[in-house]
Every structure is written in structure tokens, then in C-alpha cells.
Length: 327
Ligand SMILES: [Zn+2]
Image (cartoon, rainbow, N blue to C red):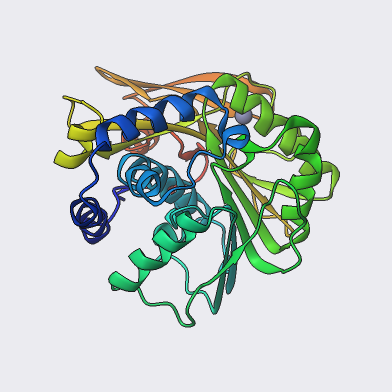
């Protein structure tokens, strides 16, 4: 399954850049990249002017779209999970909305975003796109880092948002998100070891609040590993390469995530947490298991299993006893 942002979205964003005749696009792209890596978003309230929002969409949306789509693909593996409503907290330029399109059929969508220009940009992209929702998504100006969510939805998402929350406010914010979720809460964050530490803390908070953890780490207690993270490969457009001064035609976006649910879903036995090592006649997997990190090598002699494992990807569930695997 592709995790690339749809071509029509890329075109709309590129047209926005051309129409606005943004002079300093490369400078803005560098500033955004620098701020993104410095973990100082919240203090600076950086993405307030329209031009930064457009450049943010051009440079960061393809990668965050890929990460969100990869996580939603895992959520879709949950048997019978068909949420009818969505609250996307910190919805920014609308990445989660686009990533959900075609996967879920929402009756209602509420986007919570504190930056007016981000929300305006998302709405203008939506008006130009052919994505149709049963009912038009509603935007509400809302700062998750200072207020509690009042509404409820089957699915609540917060993508690349909790890394902006001050540590002493984290538990409160996570519980506000969880309390708004009738069925599931999906959190997606960057993948530095520091980010994984925060996801581990959040996992602990949610389990304590009665949540079941459906993914990624395959059990309902604290993860015993130091760094369960995932990656998706995104094709770079010409515009993206130009803005980022990049030669390589793709980028790898690394991310961490959590899918917390009210209902307990059957858990996989293990999850692949590194790129599988494929050698002649054997495949080696690094797995997160309830007992911690595990290395598993499957040789050609284990015919059925070997055939399945050859197709397995980083991030997929792994269960040697079950014939059906995510592809
Ligand atoms: Zn883990």
C-alpha cells in the first residue's frame, strides 16, 4: 500500500506556492526544518503567517501524511473497527483528514487547530480538492495545550502534536484526548529516542486510565524496549527537492505511534521494529514482543513461514502461527 500523498494534493500545494509568489520559500523551508528539529514549536508559535503555512505544507506534509497513513493502515487491521466520527486535535494543514480519506467513512469530522492560518489553508485545500465527506468537516480554533476537549468522537487523532506539549502538562492533555474518544485514540509523533520515551510515558498513562493498546507493541503493558519506531519511504516531488536542496528522490520519515482502544482487540504475537534483513536463504527479523526485544531468523527450510516472511515489512505484525499477515 502506498503511503505517498495523492498527486492532486501535491498539485494544489504547488499551485498555492506559485499563486502566492512566495519570495523566500527556501529560507522558510530551512527555518521550518530547523524549528522542527529543535523541539521548540510551542514556545515560538512559529507557523502563524500564511506563507510559512504553505511552505510547511509543501515540505512537511508529504512525510507526515506517509506516517499517518502507515498508522491508519495498522488501525484498519483491527477487526470491525469502523469509526463513524473523527476529532483531529492539532489538525494543522489537514494531513489526517487527507490520510483518512478512502479508509474511513465519517459522518462527522471536527478539526481542532489553534493557528488560524493553518486552518484557513487546510480549508482552502479542501475546497479545491475532490475529497467528499458525508458532512463538511468543521474547524474550531482550539489550543490543546491549554484547554480540554469538550466534544466526543469514535476516533480521536493527534498527529505530530504531543511533542509540542510541555512535560508537566502531558498527562492532562493525554487524558483530555482519551476522554474524547468513544472507541479509539491514535497518536503519532516523530521517532527520536526522546520521542519514544514520551510515547512510553503516554502508553503508561493510557493503560492506567483503562485503555487497551492495540498497536504497535503487542501487549497491554509497558514496552520493554528502548526504541520501537517505524519508517515510511516517501517520493520527493521536484518542488520538494528544490525547497529542501535535496538530491535524493525520496525521504524516509521515521515515526512512533500508539493506537489505544476502549475495546480489547486480539493482539499480534510480535511486531517488526527494524527493516527485515534479507540474505540468501534466510530472513532475520527484529521484533518487539511481550518479553522485550527478540531476534528471529527464518530459513528457507521453514517453507510456508519463509514465503510469508519474505514479504514482511518494518512495522508489520508478526505471528508465526497465523497464515494471514498484513501485506
Ligand atoms: Zn515496543
